[in-house]
Length: 363
Image 1 (cartoon, rainbow, N blue to C red):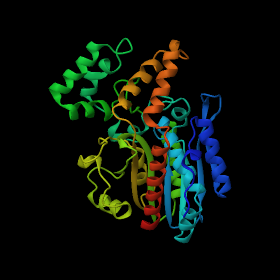
Image 2: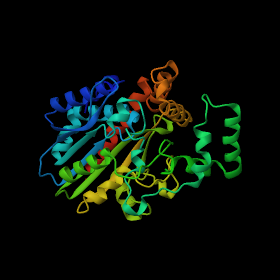
Image 3: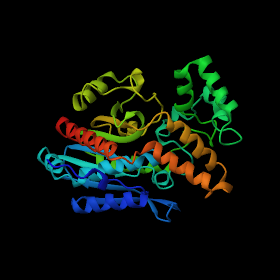
């Protein structure tokens, strides 16, 4: 099976990524649908849309889902993985031979993808938004303590600010600091990792797509592509099942291998969070045997949190939009989640292809 040229699959703007996705889907004779985000436009004035491409028989009992852009700016990587898959005649032949349909969901968070934000149009982190009615509030006293330090009154942050953050880590430990910052919160709508109080447009649209395309399937495997955590270019396979679901973890490892890790078992680069998108499959397709992973590609730690803080600080100050510093903060955020190097791109596409083939053979 031949592999595509890595760089040609990648884009640097959402509008170009979407175009590449649509062209690849058309060339692969995929059926397509667009879920347009109403009332908002992209950074280039373009339409913002969660796009769907479907390959395979409508009545296929097994379905592979590959999604990108749940965290907006991380979508440049996931989009390339989807384009490479649709261009790969060998992978498409394997899907057809094993009667596995493939659903590609592009730009789950198109606003963040286009505007170079990790969050959506309401500052919501989508992987903290897919919560049930019993988890409307994400109580996080640790974040409450840190909020004004993470987003101080002035930027760049002062030496005193850095010292205060370090004191928190010294007193509570780095693990507690990381958990406080990243696990999600609902007390600060303008803060980091905000989960929102109601299902976002992306949440509602994604659930509708799962119901439409997941109906009557016996088996579903879902790969949601992310970036920003872990060693350079390494794709960690993080269990997408519910916390403590030992049986589902075992099933997931039968599909993707024993190196699947679980955030809830504390052996992942990611922390366990409430409300991740992958959990929606259990709500919307309860009749299916469901497995899923977040395929998390490492970039250059520890730049991601610093970049998120800077971008968020400028976002909260619209009067500074378009300034050199604000534009620079957005580019730095993109660079924290997307490495524009041939080696990194090749590593990403090779591991993504392997994960797709594993899922195809495991379904």
